[in-house]
Image (spheres, rainbow, N blue to C red):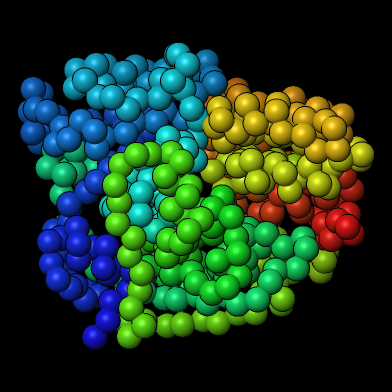
Length: 433
Protein backbone atom coordinates (compact mmCIF):
# COMPACT_ATOMS: atom_id res chain seq x y z
CA UNK A 1 0.00 0.00 0.00
CA UNK A 2 1.28 3.45 -0.89
CA UNK A 3 1.49 6.53 1.33
CA UNK A 4 0.44 10.14 0.90
CA UNK A 5 2.99 12.94 1.04
CA UNK A 6 1.90 13.77 4.61
CA UNK A 7 2.32 10.17 5.71
CA UNK A 8 5.76 9.95 4.08
CA UNK A 9 7.02 13.09 5.82
CA UNK A 10 5.72 11.91 9.20
CA UNK A 11 7.17 8.42 8.71
CA UNK A 12 10.55 9.96 7.92
CA UNK A 13 10.34 12.22 10.98
CA UNK A 14 9.43 9.23 13.14
CA UNK A 15 12.26 7.05 11.79
CA UNK A 16 9.79 4.53 10.38
CA UNK A 17 9.34 2.93 6.97
CA UNK A 18 5.62 3.58 6.94
CA UNK A 19 2.77 4.99 9.00
CA UNK A 20 -1.00 4.74 8.73
CA UNK A 21 -3.79 7.19 9.57
CA UNK A 22 -4.87 6.92 13.20
CA UNK A 23 -1.49 5.75 14.50
CA UNK A 24 0.07 7.70 17.36
CA UNK A 25 3.74 8.32 16.64
CA UNK A 26 6.62 10.33 18.08
CA UNK A 27 7.72 12.87 15.51
CA UNK A 28 10.98 14.84 15.50
CA UNK A 29 10.56 18.53 14.78
CA UNK A 30 12.80 20.49 12.45
CA UNK A 31 11.44 23.91 13.38
CA UNK A 32 9.43 25.32 16.29
CA UNK A 33 7.94 28.77 15.72
CA UNK A 34 6.30 31.00 18.28
CA UNK A 35 5.34 34.68 18.48
CA UNK A 36 4.41 37.44 20.90
CA UNK A 37 0.94 36.12 21.73
CA UNK A 38 1.83 32.51 22.55
CA UNK A 39 5.58 32.78 23.09
CA UNK A 40 5.48 33.85 26.76
CA UNK A 41 3.13 30.97 27.59
CA UNK A 42 5.31 28.49 25.70
CA UNK A 43 8.39 29.72 27.55
CA UNK A 44 6.51 29.42 30.84
CA UNK A 45 5.63 25.78 30.15
CA UNK A 46 9.20 25.03 29.04
CA UNK A 47 10.70 26.48 32.25
CA UNK A 48 8.11 24.87 34.49
CA UNK A 49 8.65 21.39 33.04
CA UNK A 50 12.37 21.45 32.30
CA UNK A 51 13.72 23.97 34.82
CA UNK A 52 14.77 27.61 34.73
CA UNK A 53 18.27 26.69 33.60
CA UNK A 54 17.20 24.22 30.89
CA UNK A 55 18.36 24.73 27.31
CA UNK A 56 16.19 24.38 24.24
CA UNK A 57 16.64 21.18 22.28
CA UNK A 58 18.14 22.94 19.26
CA UNK A 59 19.04 26.64 19.11
CA UNK A 60 18.86 26.59 15.30
CA UNK A 61 15.41 25.01 15.40
CA UNK A 62 13.62 27.67 17.47
CA UNK A 63 12.36 30.68 15.53
CA UNK A 64 10.67 33.53 17.43
CA UNK A 65 8.77 36.15 15.43
CA UNK A 66 6.88 38.94 17.22
CA UNK A 67 4.15 40.10 14.82
CA UNK A 68 0.63 40.17 16.28
CA UNK A 69 0.49 43.18 18.61
CA UNK A 70 3.52 45.26 17.70
CA UNK A 71 2.66 48.87 16.81
CA UNK A 72 0.70 49.71 19.93
CA UNK A 73 1.12 51.56 23.21
CA UNK A 74 -0.41 48.65 25.13
CA UNK A 75 1.97 47.83 28.00
CA UNK A 76 1.01 44.15 28.16
CA UNK A 77 1.92 43.74 24.51
CA UNK A 78 5.29 45.37 25.21
CA UNK A 79 5.76 43.07 28.21
CA UNK A 80 5.22 40.03 25.99
CA UNK A 81 7.93 41.12 23.58
CA UNK A 82 10.26 41.87 26.49
CA UNK A 83 9.69 38.32 27.74
CA UNK A 84 10.68 36.93 24.36
CA UNK A 85 13.71 39.21 24.13
CA UNK A 86 14.96 38.09 27.56
CA UNK A 87 14.54 34.41 26.72
CA UNK A 88 16.33 34.77 23.40
CA UNK A 89 19.29 36.38 25.17
CA UNK A 90 19.36 33.68 27.88
CA UNK A 91 19.32 30.91 25.30
CA UNK A 92 21.51 32.56 22.67
CA UNK A 93 18.91 31.97 19.97
CA UNK A 94 19.98 33.15 16.49
CA UNK A 95 16.52 33.57 14.97
CA UNK A 96 14.64 36.37 16.68
CA UNK A 97 13.04 39.11 14.58
CA UNK A 98 13.05 41.95 17.08
CA UNK A 99 10.57 44.86 16.60
CA UNK A 100 13.18 47.13 18.21
CA UNK A 101 15.76 46.84 15.43
CA UNK A 102 16.38 46.17 11.75
CA UNK A 103 15.81 42.43 12.14
CA UNK A 104 12.06 42.98 12.53
CA UNK A 105 10.22 41.31 9.69
CA UNK A 106 6.48 41.14 10.28
CA UNK A 107 3.92 38.36 10.00
CA UNK A 108 5.38 34.99 10.98
CA UNK A 109 3.73 32.96 8.20
CA UNK A 110 5.30 35.10 5.49
CA UNK A 111 8.57 35.71 7.36
CA UNK A 112 9.31 32.00 7.77
CA UNK A 113 9.58 31.20 4.04
CA UNK A 114 11.17 34.57 3.21
CA UNK A 115 13.98 33.93 5.71
CA UNK A 116 14.63 30.35 4.58
CA UNK A 117 13.11 28.51 7.55
CA UNK A 118 10.72 26.51 5.36
CA UNK A 119 12.02 23.47 3.48
CA UNK A 120 10.26 20.57 1.75
CA UNK A 121 10.08 17.29 3.64
CA UNK A 122 10.56 18.83 7.07
CA UNK A 123 8.27 19.17 10.11
CA UNK A 124 7.24 22.55 11.49
CA UNK A 125 5.22 23.09 14.65
CA UNK A 126 4.00 26.59 15.34
CA UNK A 127 1.92 28.20 18.09
CA UNK A 128 -0.50 29.60 15.55
CA UNK A 129 -3.29 27.82 13.74
CA UNK A 130 -2.27 29.23 10.35
CA UNK A 131 1.09 27.46 10.54
CA UNK A 132 -0.50 25.14 7.97
CA UNK A 133 0.49 27.83 5.41
CA UNK A 134 3.86 26.18 4.93
CA UNK A 135 2.55 22.97 3.45
CA UNK A 136 2.57 25.05 0.27
CA UNK A 137 6.29 24.29 0.13
CA UNK A 138 5.90 20.55 0.61
CA UNK A 139 6.45 20.28 4.37
CA UNK A 140 4.28 19.05 7.23
CA UNK A 141 3.31 22.19 9.13
CA UNK A 142 0.65 22.45 11.79
CA UNK A 143 -0.42 24.64 14.67
CA UNK A 144 -0.08 23.50 18.29
CA UNK A 145 -0.84 24.93 21.72
CA UNK A 146 1.55 26.35 24.29
CA UNK A 147 1.79 23.12 26.30
CA UNK A 148 2.82 21.05 23.28
CA UNK A 149 5.15 23.83 22.14
CA UNK A 150 6.86 23.95 25.53
CA UNK A 151 7.46 20.20 25.28
CA UNK A 152 8.85 20.50 21.75
CA UNK A 153 11.08 23.34 22.91
CA UNK A 154 12.66 21.02 25.45
CA UNK A 155 12.74 17.72 23.57
CA UNK A 156 12.38 18.39 19.86
CA UNK A 157 9.66 15.76 19.70
CA UNK A 158 5.88 15.53 19.82
CA UNK A 159 3.41 12.66 19.97
CA UNK A 160 0.83 13.13 17.22
CA UNK A 161 -1.83 11.08 15.51
CA UNK A 162 -1.27 10.50 11.81
CA UNK A 163 -4.10 12.31 9.99
CA UNK A 164 -6.05 10.78 7.12
CA UNK A 165 -5.75 12.73 3.88
CA UNK A 166 -8.47 14.37 1.84
CA UNK A 167 -7.35 15.19 -1.69
CA UNK A 168 -8.54 18.12 -3.82
CA UNK A 169 -7.67 17.84 -7.51
CA UNK A 170 -8.14 20.96 -9.61
CA UNK A 171 -7.32 20.72 -13.31
CA UNK A 172 -7.49 23.35 -16.02
CA UNK A 173 -6.86 27.10 -16.05
CA UNK A 174 -8.46 29.58 -13.67
CA UNK A 175 -10.39 32.43 -15.33
CA UNK A 176 -9.14 36.01 -15.01
CA UNK A 177 -10.31 37.46 -11.71
CA UNK A 178 -10.14 34.17 -9.81
CA UNK A 179 -7.40 33.84 -7.18
CA UNK A 180 -6.26 31.26 -4.68
CA UNK A 181 -8.46 32.96 -2.08
CA UNK A 182 -11.53 32.25 -4.21
CA UNK A 183 -10.41 28.64 -4.60
CA UNK A 184 -10.00 27.89 -0.92
CA UNK A 185 -13.17 29.77 0.05
CA UNK A 186 -15.11 27.76 -2.53
CA UNK A 187 -13.73 24.51 -1.12
CA UNK A 188 -14.50 25.52 2.47
CA UNK A 189 -17.98 26.52 1.37
CA UNK A 190 -18.46 23.10 -0.21
CA UNK A 191 -17.24 20.93 2.67
CA UNK A 192 -17.91 23.22 5.66
CA UNK A 193 -15.71 24.45 8.48
CA UNK A 194 -15.63 20.92 9.89
CA UNK A 195 -15.38 19.12 6.56
CA UNK A 196 -11.72 18.16 6.97
CA UNK A 197 -11.46 17.93 10.75
CA UNK A 198 -8.03 16.56 11.72
CA UNK A 199 -7.28 15.68 8.09
CA UNK A 200 -4.40 16.52 5.84
CA UNK A 201 -5.79 18.58 2.96
CA UNK A 202 -3.72 17.76 -0.12
CA UNK A 203 -4.09 20.01 -3.17
CA UNK A 204 -3.06 18.78 -6.61
CA UNK A 205 -3.81 19.08 -10.31
CA UNK A 206 -2.65 21.20 -13.22
CA UNK A 207 -4.39 24.34 -11.93
CA UNK A 208 -2.56 24.07 -8.60
CA UNK A 209 0.72 23.48 -10.41
CA UNK A 210 0.10 26.69 -12.35
CA UNK A 211 -0.14 28.81 -9.19
CA UNK A 212 2.74 30.85 -7.82
CA UNK A 213 4.27 29.92 -4.48
CA UNK A 214 2.52 32.84 -2.77
CA UNK A 215 -0.86 31.75 -4.14
CA UNK A 216 -0.22 28.19 -2.96
CA UNK A 217 0.50 29.66 0.48
CA UNK A 218 -2.93 31.31 0.50
CA UNK A 219 -4.64 27.98 -0.16
CA UNK A 220 -2.74 26.04 2.51
CA UNK A 221 -3.07 28.94 4.97
CA UNK A 222 -6.82 28.43 5.20
CA UNK A 223 -6.85 24.63 5.52
CA UNK A 224 -7.45 25.19 9.22
CA UNK A 225 -10.72 26.99 8.37
CA UNK A 226 -12.05 23.61 7.19
CA UNK A 227 -10.75 21.95 10.36
CA UNK A 228 -7.65 20.56 8.65
CA UNK A 229 -4.61 19.36 10.56
CA UNK A 230 -2.41 20.57 7.72
CA UNK A 231 -2.58 21.69 4.12
CA UNK A 232 0.01 20.45 1.66
CA UNK A 233 1.08 20.71 -1.97
CA UNK A 234 3.75 18.44 -3.45
CA UNK A 235 6.98 20.31 -4.20
CA UNK A 236 7.90 20.95 -7.83
CA UNK A 237 10.46 23.00 -9.74
CA UNK A 238 8.87 26.27 -8.55
CA UNK A 239 9.15 25.08 -4.95
CA UNK A 240 12.77 24.04 -5.27
CA UNK A 241 13.71 27.31 -6.98
CA UNK A 242 12.01 29.38 -4.28
CA UNK A 243 13.54 27.45 -1.37
CA UNK A 244 17.04 27.39 -2.83
CA UNK A 245 16.87 31.15 -3.31
CA UNK A 246 16.27 31.52 0.44
CA UNK A 247 18.46 28.86 2.08
CA UNK A 248 21.50 26.76 1.41
CA UNK A 249 20.36 23.94 3.69
CA UNK A 250 19.68 20.52 2.17
CA UNK A 251 16.14 19.13 2.02
CA UNK A 252 14.20 16.16 0.69
CA UNK A 253 11.14 16.29 -1.54
CA UNK A 254 8.35 13.78 -1.03
CA UNK A 255 5.35 13.05 -3.23
CA UNK A 256 2.27 10.89 -2.74
CA UNK A 257 2.34 7.38 -4.17
CA UNK A 258 -0.11 6.60 -6.95
CA UNK A 259 -1.44 3.83 -4.72
CA UNK A 260 -1.93 6.13 -1.73
CA UNK A 261 -5.24 5.76 0.09
CA UNK A 262 -7.39 8.85 0.71
CA UNK A 263 -10.32 9.39 3.02
CA UNK A 264 -12.01 11.30 0.22
CA UNK A 265 -11.16 12.82 -3.15
CA UNK A 266 -12.81 15.96 -4.59
CA UNK A 267 -12.29 16.91 -8.23
CA UNK A 268 -12.84 20.36 -9.73
CA UNK A 269 -12.45 22.10 -13.07
CA UNK A 270 -10.61 25.40 -12.73
CA UNK A 271 -12.79 27.01 -15.41
CA UNK A 272 -15.83 26.69 -13.14
CA UNK A 273 -14.45 28.89 -10.36
CA UNK A 274 -15.71 32.46 -9.93
CA UNK A 275 -14.86 35.26 -7.48
CA UNK A 276 -16.55 34.50 -4.15
CA UNK A 277 -16.94 36.00 -0.68
CA UNK A 278 -17.57 34.52 2.76
CA UNK A 279 -20.29 36.46 4.54
CA UNK A 280 -20.48 36.81 8.35
CA UNK A 281 -19.98 34.98 10.52
CA UNK A 282 -18.23 31.91 9.14
CA UNK A 283 -15.65 31.14 6.44
CA UNK A 284 -18.03 28.56 4.95
CA UNK A 285 -20.86 31.07 4.40
CA UNK A 286 -19.71 31.41 0.81
CA UNK A 287 -21.52 33.16 -2.03
CA UNK A 288 -20.49 34.22 -5.53
CA UNK A 289 -19.43 37.87 -5.38
CA UNK A 290 -21.80 38.62 -8.26
CA UNK A 291 -24.83 37.25 -6.40
CA UNK A 292 -24.05 38.08 -2.77
CA UNK A 293 -26.40 41.05 -2.84
CA UNK A 294 -25.73 44.77 -2.75
CA UNK A 295 -24.00 44.83 0.63
CA UNK A 296 -22.96 48.35 1.66
CA UNK A 297 -19.44 48.56 3.05
CA UNK A 298 -17.67 50.92 5.45
CA UNK A 299 -14.11 49.82 4.82
CA UNK A 300 -11.80 47.57 2.82
CA UNK A 301 -8.75 45.85 4.30
CA UNK A 302 -5.95 44.34 2.22
CA UNK A 303 -3.33 42.58 4.33
CA UNK A 304 -2.55 39.64 6.69
CA UNK A 305 -0.70 36.35 6.19
CA UNK A 306 -3.49 35.37 3.80
CA UNK A 307 -3.75 38.57 1.77
CA UNK A 308 -0.73 40.77 2.47
CA UNK A 309 1.89 39.24 0.17
CA UNK A 310 3.32 41.01 -2.89
CA UNK A 311 1.14 38.95 -5.23
CA UNK A 312 -1.96 40.06 -3.32
CA UNK A 313 -1.03 43.73 -3.73
CA UNK A 314 -0.32 43.22 -7.42
CA UNK A 315 -3.86 41.90 -7.80
CA UNK A 316 -5.33 44.85 -5.90
CA UNK A 317 -3.28 47.31 -7.95
CA UNK A 318 -4.68 45.94 -11.21
CA UNK A 319 -8.11 47.09 -10.08
CA UNK A 320 -7.16 50.32 -8.32
CA UNK A 321 -4.87 51.87 -10.93
CA UNK A 322 -6.52 54.96 -12.35
CA UNK A 323 -9.52 54.65 -10.02
CA UNK A 324 -10.55 56.08 -6.67
CA UNK A 325 -11.81 54.28 -3.58
CA UNK A 326 -14.92 55.64 -1.88
CA UNK A 327 -14.46 53.96 1.52
CA UNK A 328 -11.53 53.78 3.95
CA UNK A 329 -9.10 51.31 2.44
CA UNK A 330 -6.28 49.88 4.55
CA UNK A 331 -3.06 48.57 3.00
CA UNK A 332 -1.07 46.36 5.39
CA UNK A 333 2.01 44.58 3.98
CA UNK A 334 2.73 41.30 5.73
CA UNK A 335 6.48 41.81 6.06
CA UNK A 336 9.24 44.35 5.72
CA UNK A 337 10.27 42.65 2.48
CA UNK A 338 6.77 43.14 1.07
CA UNK A 339 6.67 46.75 2.34
CA UNK A 340 9.96 47.43 0.56
CA UNK A 341 8.59 45.89 -2.64
CA UNK A 342 5.56 48.20 -2.51
CA UNK A 343 7.99 51.10 -2.87
CA UNK A 344 9.94 49.49 -5.71
CA UNK A 345 7.61 47.38 -7.86
CA UNK A 346 5.97 49.47 -10.57
CA UNK A 347 2.75 49.20 -12.50
CA UNK A 348 2.21 51.61 -15.39
CA UNK A 349 5.19 53.68 -14.25
CA UNK A 350 4.14 54.10 -10.62
CA UNK A 351 5.18 52.18 -7.53
CA UNK A 352 2.44 50.18 -5.88
CA UNK A 353 2.53 52.50 -2.86
CA UNK A 354 2.11 55.55 -5.10
CA UNK A 355 -0.73 53.87 -6.95
CA UNK A 356 -2.56 52.99 -3.73
CA UNK A 357 -2.20 56.50 -2.28
CA UNK A 358 -3.35 58.10 -5.54
CA UNK A 359 -6.39 55.80 -5.45
CA UNK A 360 -7.25 57.27 -2.05
CA UNK A 361 -6.13 54.37 0.14
CA UNK A 362 -4.62 55.13 3.53
CA UNK A 363 -0.82 55.24 3.60
CA UNK A 364 0.50 51.66 3.78
CA UNK A 365 0.90 50.58 7.40
CA UNK A 366 4.04 49.11 8.98
CA UNK A 367 4.11 45.33 8.47
CA UNK A 368 2.32 43.26 11.11
CA UNK A 369 -0.82 41.21 11.72
CA UNK A 370 -2.56 44.54 12.56
CA UNK A 371 -6.36 44.29 12.62
CA UNK A 372 -6.65 40.69 11.44
CA UNK A 373 -6.77 39.58 15.06
CA UNK A 374 -8.52 42.65 16.42
CA UNK A 375 -5.92 43.76 18.91
CA UNK A 376 -5.59 46.72 21.28
CA UNK A 377 -7.69 49.81 20.63
CA UNK A 378 -4.83 51.62 18.86
CA UNK A 379 -4.24 48.80 16.35
CA UNK A 380 -4.08 49.99 12.75
CA UNK A 381 -7.32 49.23 10.91
CA UNK A 382 -9.14 47.82 13.93
CA UNK A 383 -12.94 47.99 13.75
CA UNK A 384 -14.11 50.00 16.75
CA UNK A 385 -17.82 50.18 15.92
CA UNK A 386 -20.38 48.40 13.77
CA UNK A 387 -18.41 48.73 10.52
CA UNK A 388 -18.86 46.31 7.65
CA UNK A 389 -15.42 45.42 6.28
CA UNK A 390 -14.49 43.48 3.15
CA UNK A 391 -11.15 41.90 3.96
CA UNK A 392 -8.42 39.66 2.57
CA UNK A 393 -7.95 38.10 6.01
CA UNK A 394 -8.85 34.54 6.93
CA UNK A 395 -11.58 34.63 9.60
CA UNK A 396 -14.85 36.48 9.97
CA UNK A 397 -16.09 35.31 13.37
CA UNK A 398 -17.86 37.88 15.61
CA UNK A 399 -15.33 40.41 16.88
CA UNK A 400 -12.46 38.98 14.87
CA UNK A 401 -11.34 42.39 13.57
CA UNK A 402 -12.19 44.32 16.73
CA UNK A 403 -15.66 45.33 17.83
CA UNK A 404 -18.13 42.50 18.33
CA UNK A 405 -20.63 44.70 16.48
CA UNK A 406 -18.51 44.79 13.32
CA UNK A 407 -18.95 42.42 10.39
CA UNK A 408 -16.13 41.01 8.26
CA UNK A 409 -16.61 39.67 4.74
CA UNK A 410 -13.74 37.53 3.44
CA UNK A 411 -12.67 38.12 -0.15
CA UNK A 412 -9.75 38.08 -2.57
CA UNK A 413 -7.55 41.15 -3.14
CA UNK A 414 -9.31 41.68 -6.48
CA UNK A 415 -12.72 41.70 -4.80
CA UNK A 416 -11.60 43.81 -1.84
CA UNK A 417 -10.18 46.40 -4.25
CA UNK A 418 -13.21 46.45 -6.56
CA UNK A 419 -15.53 46.76 -3.59
CA UNK A 420 -13.48 49.67 -2.26
CA UNK A 421 -14.11 51.49 -5.54
CA UNK A 422 -17.90 51.02 -5.47
CA UNK A 423 -18.54 50.93 -1.72
CA UNK A 424 -20.51 47.72 -2.16
CA UNK A 425 -19.61 44.07 -2.57
CA UNK A 426 -18.52 43.90 -6.19
CA UNK A 427 -17.49 41.19 -8.64
CA UNK A 428 -13.99 42.35 -9.67
CA UNK A 429 -14.16 41.00 -13.21
CA UNK A 430 -15.89 44.18 -14.40
CA UNK A 431 -12.64 46.06 -13.69
CA UNK A 432 -10.23 43.55 -15.23
CA UNK A 433 -9.18 43.36 -18.85
